[in-house]
Image (cartoon, rainbow, N blue to C red):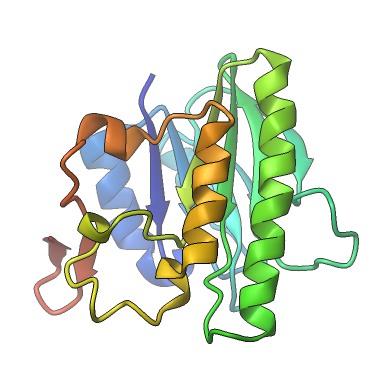
Length: 208
């Protein structure tokens, strides 16, 4: 089973790229972040062979799960804060696997309420992750974590030193999540680090 995750930064604006990526990689399940819409192109994606679940927000955030097999929504929104209206978490059962698509808050600027929200959201994620781990189900927490866990996870750590993604408290919260018993799939496959990607809009290609 191939499960992929992709911060698309606007589904409607990047729809041609999304369709190219799906055709090229053929994931069984694709988790999207920053879909930035409440008008998700479900019909177009169905023609491409994918059923869709999503929780959207106009112009900001939003996550989706695309699946070749029928998927059943389990949870919409991360528990623990009834007043949180940001669309950042979606959980579903896909072909016997519990899969969450998550978009963790950025947290900049530091210090400030956005960073406080980031840390509180991470605590809520830890709580939900513990429940999922205890369930005994096969679980994948896929998404954009907005954390740089190690210096070798970024091209220039000095340039990012003041960023919310590299702050000790954010790194510690990510470690606490892993210490529950989770596996960082990227670090597992690339223990030496040095793995990062971004879309080069001028070149129209993925870069590293």
